[in-house]
Image (cartoon, rainbow, N blue to C red):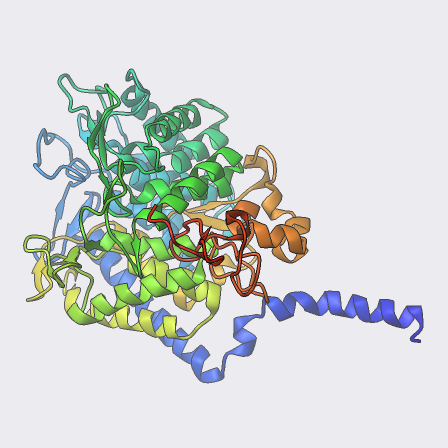
Length: 572
């Protein structure tokens, strides 16, 4: 028998090398040629970003966004979400929207000098006391989120800003903007108006229609603002709206797309994971990560299972009536491409990969990702053929590479970079595609191209900014740190004793990974997804329904047939 001291010594050695086995450094494992390729691609993305940024600063700053074809500008903050271009302000001259959106990207790419210059300019020149009617959701994710994130980065000592030059000016601006949001929440339901005038509040006869994402995707930015200022009001109104929205779900745990903030009635019952709803799901899960509230997790758990049950069809997700679960529209929308990235955070890697490959197939088919593609007819939507430089496919590619380290995702990223340079790059920046069948361009460089598209592509090829740091990204790509001080308590799912390998065999078999708040197991139990519960017996024989599990794809409960086999015998 080996001496006890020898056994203890080897156990210590094993504990030291264990993290390197299961979390290997990609820089040590990848061949030299692969590292060189990543470096080349990183520099291509850097050039893309600065081509867009420098042209904005030359031709559009301090206005909101660049018009790259004419090398001019648009003060577009009041136009975001305003499809009919109604009630546009007369004397609004921009809020340097693209600069605000670019702040974290500058720092991620290592340009602390330009970041600091931009922060100081904004702190001295920007005011939100302007007569401009803006979309609450858009202004929240772009402006408030950009300011809050940049403030946190500016106060991070590792970013080496000039000592004493920054005195919380961005936080002061963010709090001023947050206060201007508050009148929107003064409704009988607590659900906020979709539109707010930054100077005068809610306008007379303002529309009462809003979207699910519009009133359910405010918690990250406003919650962070409360944590930073010590004023709980911002987080309170955002949570109150989220709770009210969740209470309006159907018996199937589905939510529609649009609703009335005064009556609390649904206007559009068709629902999906695309436009009007997308970030609602994203923020439920990310709010749980950021603030540690189990309430957010319970909402997300139920909502995610409902999506898998009623929307998923193979690798695609169609839309369905929230009341019945019956399919309504069979279509792909470019905003849906965020979903694989969210599934990576959940741990549903196989499902994420399946959907991501289909999105990329459509990208390859057209050269970019069209706004809407009709799955049932295998054709483009006749009026929504455009591609406005959206980031969602790049975002999901980044997350999937982080999770798998599969070099195929680097090739996807390279293809995206090459297409953007081939089809959308012009002398004055990067232009949106008006028609993907002809590649006719449109004179608009959206701010999210710098906030998200370039950022996620850069991080795909160089994730050094994230080393030894724990961030979640808002729906606009602004990083927020996961801090213990922001948690009511550290969720049990982050405590080592609750890791998946520590679960008892009996418990792991009869509960899903989502229920246990762990990543899906990758062992002899053959757990295939976050909702999957294996049947009690490997041969799927059964005597009662209790011996049957949950289907890995549809997340539907399996039942025991009269012949004694588990399966999806019931239609619902």
